[in-house]
Length: 95
Image (cartoon, one colour):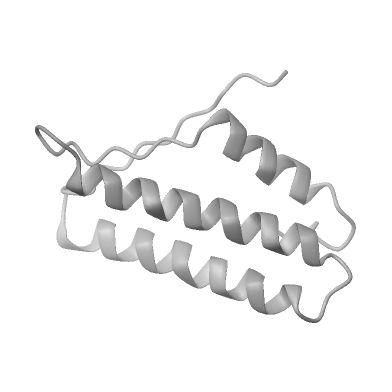
């Protein structure tokens, strides 16, 4: 099993971090769903879209959660596994 790797973003560090992160995740998810409609690797594209949407949900939860807003987003082991598995499929080498 691969050791978990964590990336943290301070969503309150500046005005751009939240916007850039949420736009990138949303655009990626949308693009993957679109590609799923015309690709033999549809299930891979759907998995990637769902992983991006789950991360986007975690960003929103971090900002609306109880207590002090720390704005920290960490990729879970499960999401890392989805990403790793998706990248092993033919045609996904460029991601």
